[in-house]
Length: 441
Image 1 (tube, rainbow, N blue to C red):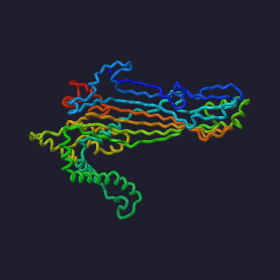
Image 2: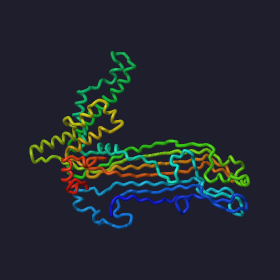
Image 3: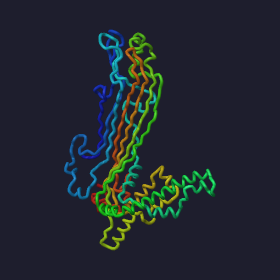
Image 4: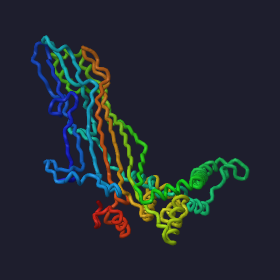
């Protein structure tokens, strides 16, 4: 039966044995001895994917493939056919994949295998290797919607007037040179006055002037997009972080400690038993990229009636110039210190989106928040000195990648359809985004 399934498969790594879990070394500890082998390390890497499948893992198909194709009606009024998705996988890369100590053959003592590193304090101590991925943060979905709304105001005349009436910014250096004398304590006040007073006011005035200059073109576009499929994409900057997880001294490379396990064969491989030891460190680099893709639909009021003409005029004034009455969004923006709250939680975007979706029959036709996370864990061993030559720095690198896709409801991310209002359900039914009842397609 078709549905959401999770599937997992082992990933073979370069230098591994056929069972995709073990790395092995081969050796002969003294001349004319018996060759043998042992396991250097056991590490299990897998790819795990959760996605929609048209058949279950047993292979029984329950969905007609024609049901997955877009019909003519879908093209005229597109419907979201996508699903949530996640996949993650791991990989190991070795700088010394097949290192040789001594000379194999002719009855000589030798050791051959991958140079690998173990370290006390490893935060993934088990043989099963999985990346430490954080849950998806829907803050980015809410923020992306707020920035991508097709009905987002190009300027904010009402907010500007209210803010100026509430607190008119002072001059650039009103406190620094108060009374004609230099006042060092006023520098900080003037800086805050510029950052939170003058600069935003100038930015709002610039937006208003641009909106006036581009009024005709923006108006035509706004009217033309009404009732259409308005696509949007929003990319966030990639965030990067690094940290040192563990660092140890006097550590031997995995599998090489047996070379000094008995004084009878130590001299076959090293001049001094301390030569196999070095300093090891485990460090991590992490990058995370969020981006949003979606499509919106909104409807302007009909101009066939006087009330419709007035309604459309109000919509145009709100969109192109930001002329509006007191809304929850405006009240929040005017409240003191809300900008500081938005540094930690995006309450402003939540209120803004709620106000936007309560107007203009605005809905998200389809919307997805994607996240790509990459974790690079590097194990480094300083050097081991064998009779046949030093290793130089030895590196073992684990890379983990996770890709996630989260689906939006017609009114945003993380919302429960059971909380939709009667008006919202009426809009969804009219747009064909339900099955005729209170269930989203």
